Amino acid sequence: MGATTSMASAQLSVTPGESIEANVLVRNNGTLVDQFSLDIVGDAREWVEVVPRVMNLMPGQDGTATVTFSPPRDSSVLAGPVPFGVRVLSREEPAGSSVEEGVVEVAAFTDLQVELSPKSSKCRSKAVHEVVVDNAGNHPVGVELVTIDPEEQLRLTLDHTSLMVQPGTSAFLKLRAKPYDRFLRGKERRHPFQVTATSADLPPTTVNGTVVQEQLLPKWLLPAAIAAVALAGVLAVLWFTMVKPTVQTAAREEAREQAQEMQGEMMDMANQAEEKAAEAEESAAEAEKKAAEAADTVAEVGGGGAGAARGATTSPEGVNIASGSTVDFRITTDVAAAPDPEAFEPFGVPEGVIPADKTLVVTDIIMQNPRGDNGTLRILRGEDVLLEAGLANFRDLDYHFLEPWTFAPDAPLTVEVSCQTPGAPEPADGDCGPAVSFSGRLSGPTEGG
Image: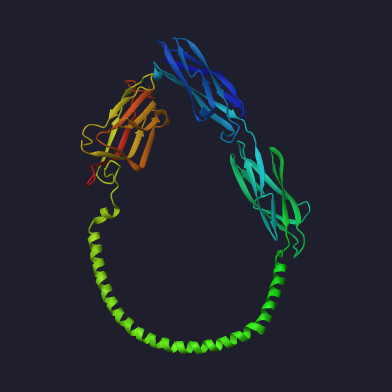
């Protein structure tokens, strides 16, 4: 009993950026008035729409839904066959639900772009450019690259001349341009060149570039050399006529004064050496005393244990969340299907798991929805919602927290579930039954908290 479905054509073809429609016939084979929900399963569900999504049928009555396929014209949908399924869910007889399968052939399209960066460069002996080949189509494209130097003044070298560019990706190639001739001085020389990309599916694409060749000698070098020679001549004349005689006389007088000063300094240094030797003995004794005191202090500090070195991590409520006894438990649910998506049924922590004077510190959670129920699951601290997830979005989902969740006695942990449609195979009671496992610690207030 339940529903039967059929599609006029299970083999379809569509061009990206365009749409194609197909009709699905739904028949109520049951003995009760039933409501059927329609949706799409498979990789095509992101760009397939079914109208209507819900239909009510009398026993033996047929209904028709329109399925529209509209793949986007970009590289996110690859060319080729894409299987899909139109799923029809019965509210009265979920076990009688059905899936009509088919295949839609997505046509290939090509969108190849070629860029050159930079378009113009300056050099004395060698320039480097980058060729970017971007495949914005939905299938791999083989590309051949050819460099053209119309004036035959450059030696052009590419990393690769043949490549295969996958859809939605870009290939980056180094292009080295080296002029055949170089010159020491003269005006700049402009050398144009081209890079052409050819593909079997597209006409050739050409980008233009220019290498501006400069003289080997920097323009500032010759004026700087002339200025340096002139300055050296001026300094030589000043040295021999004025500076050298004055320096010689001053040097002799300075030498006599320094000799006298050195004799006095040597006597002072001898006296200071004796005084410093005595001070060094006193400093050594004092250093030994301080080292002994420091060793005693280190021993006292080290006696605090590793916990004192690490310190305690405390929550704003004064709870030590870095220590305590480990705990793990599981909250299971059993919720009847309800048409109101805001109808949530709460489930608390099993009795006896958390003592009344302890705070629960949660570090890991695992949410399980093995039957694929459809609805919403929420995790609350008191009346505050910490996490909300659609049941249809997961079968097994785990979270590991760098900063744990804390649940004080006055703000307990609660799991709420809103059941829309039980999963398959449906249990005998027709209810949703997701579960959440929690791991963490039981902690009390910190010392002095």
